[in-house]
Image 1: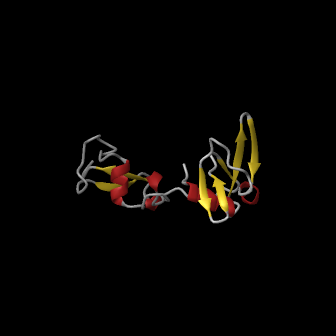
Image 2 (image 1 turned 90 degrees about the vertical axis):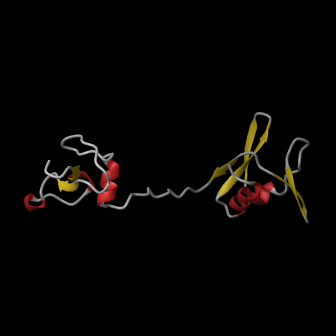
Image 3 (image 1 turned 120 degrees about the vertical axis):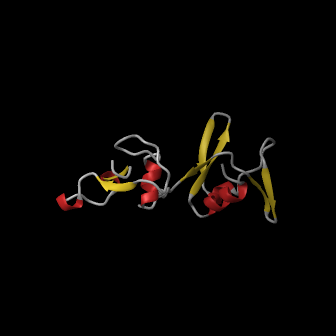
Length: 125
């Protein structure tokens, strides 16, 4: 959902194209074409010094930049949250200050410090 202002900016910068919908016909229209279209009886419009401009009901993105996945910071607190505050060996519920983080495959045997190799464990488990 975009505001008319956002839609107009995206169209004017060629990020989006509006669809001119007339009954069952849909015709894509770029900004230069769109501002020349007449305002119909049931259309919403914005008044400008050079005349009224229809507000598009549908815009189609021409280009899409993927949003990077937000990854949590790699820390003992994040591992505690990932594991639901439970010891992975005994199932015991732990407070954030309790327990320790263990490497599943010890570093001395080639284990890496990574999300998949860290587990929350109770002291002495």
